[in-house]
Every structure is written in C-alpha cells, then in structure tokens.
Image (tube, rainbow, N blue to C red; front, side, top):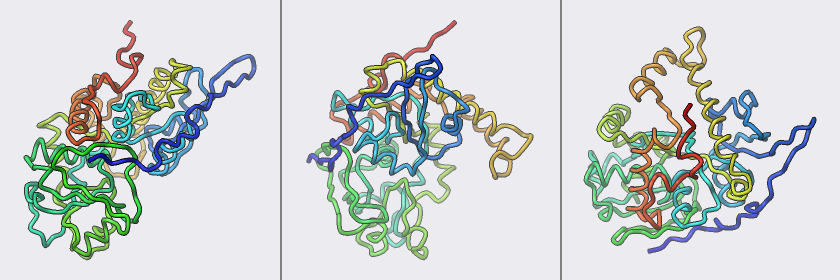
Length: 354
C-alpha cells in the first residue's frame, strides 16, 4: 500500500535564486533561516554568532509551521525539518533538501505512548491486537517508537491496527509519500482526531510527540504506558546507544548547488551557538534557566553522554543515525535503505585537522 502526500511537491520557492548583498566593499550571501525557539540556536538568531560569508534573516516560529511552510513552499533557504520527512525525501533521489548534521531537537520517546486505562495494556506486547492512533506514519517520533517496539520490545507491528489522524484537530494528512510494508493494517480518519477517539474508546492507544488533549483532560482515563519514562529511556540509551534525533537542519538544494561552501559555514556557526549555550547552562554564577541545580544537571549529563550530551556531526551520531535509517526502511518510510553517509554532503563527512 502506497500512501501519497497531499500537495507536498508544490515547492513554489524551490528554484528561487539566493540574494547577494554588497555593503562597504564586502559581498555576502543573504539567506533566510527558520527554526523554533531553542536556547542552543538563540545566538545564531540574534547575530551574536555570525556565519562566515552569510547574512542571516532568522524567523522563530512554532515547529509545525516551520515544517509545513518549508516542505510545501520552501519559504526560507535554511530550515529546521522533521528528520522523518527529510529521510523520506532523501531516499527518493534528487531531494530538494540538503541536510547538515545539526540536530536541534532530540527526545527519547518512551514518553510518547498513551493508553486507555481500561484496555489491559501494561506492556508493549499488549499493544498487539489493539488499535493505535498516530498523527502521521512518517512522523519522526513514531518511527523511533515503532523501531523500539519492533526491535527491542519484540512487538509485531502487523498485529496492530494503525489509525492516522490529527492529534487534537481533524484533517491532518501525511506529508511525504511512502510504501507500507506487507501486512501493515493502516487507515486514515479525516473526520475526527486521536484525542476524541481515545476518549470515546474507538482506539486503545496513541503514539505522539505532542501530548494529546485527552491525556490532560480525560479525567484519568488515559495514562502513559511508561509513567516513569525517564528511567526507562535512560536504560534504553545505556543498552543501545541510541539518542533519538527528531529534527535536522536542511538547506534548499538550489542554494547548496550554487554555493556549496554554505554547508560547512552553517554547521560551524550552529555548533558555536550550541557550545555557547552549554557554557551558559554550566555557569554556577547565576541561574541561566529557572530550574534548580540546572548547572549541575547539565554537567552531569555531559559526563553521562560522553562529554557532549547534544553532539552534532556525523561520527558522533553514527549509531543513532544507523538505527533511524534501519527503522525508516523497515517501516516503508524510505524507498531504499540509506546509510548515515548518504544523508549529508561530502563536505560534512570529515573535518580539517591541524
């Protein structure tokens, strides 16, 4: 079964030429950037970190809006992008997007499982024979969650009835084309949403990055499959080395092909902005974020994750990237089995050493 995306190839801005700015005898490339609000990207948005040879006009928007406007219309030159959508396009060949190994959002997804409390679902295997709602089959969080179910928890994904719908609003559609594996039971609902179906009992469970309204307003009818999800996620990381990457930074191909140097220069600037953020977080002089012991916690997790709790780059993330490539192909999100080296241009597969 092949599921077509709705209007994803409109791409009205796909071939737009980048602008060159000349000022005071200096020539720079003008690019637009869109991400959601992150402290580790803040210095890039504010201009405290500059990109060599580039003037950035940056937009901070809700993440769903960033994804929708970039995928559908290519409204900016550089954008945060769903990793699931990115890898789906990459597998089809000649993707309109070129990625750089900057990962602004990483979230473990044991927290993404929501179940009705009256369906006897106490463990992952109990999902077999049940109906599970998902916002999109190609949603990154869902790809990782199903990868965990299949590869770690031993769940047969063919024994679950999957229902795709908006999480809290009706009408959500898939955004990339994919081919479901044989035996997968999948249907779409445009007339309702997952929260409503959870509360009415039409579905037994849901997997979603966003917390469903039904969980917060359901009067205890809806529970997490993993109430102490942090403990389970830490155990999963210790056992597998996987730290799920949710989002990636992508460049319009028309920009990269004309100015291939932008990839490395952008990567270096994103990395500098992140390092400045980490330095702020670990500063004991003042409370940089309103969380008790934030600096000590940041230092602790840096040690637990090999010195850098939020690494960018290909090699530092190879184990997670390999797992995601595997999950995406096994679930039909990618047309071909990709390797981590297939995801990023050659300019970013190695770095200068002095």
